[in-house]
Length: 120
Image (tube, rainbow, N blue to C red; front, top):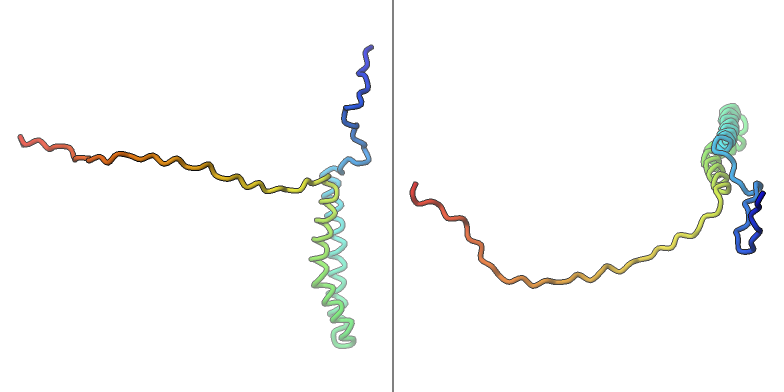
């Protein structure tokens, strides 16, 4: 049985702890977090409706929560998913100079229309 010799120049093996989570598991987790955020938002709307005339300060706080929570939920879900995608390399924009166009000087020519038959 032959073994591959260990080489110092070889890249290190990938560790399973750095592996990305599966797409299905990641999607399920994001859906769960979003559902919890929307349940909290629904609770904020119910609290706002129930306390509007009795405790207006609490109602306004619940209204602000109901408005802000969807934005925060989406931002958190996207930030969490980008952490598991691996390293992202910086994009460098390389502007290539266009190749210089070669100008060709054409000689002037005269184009005549085709001659018509005079027999007709």
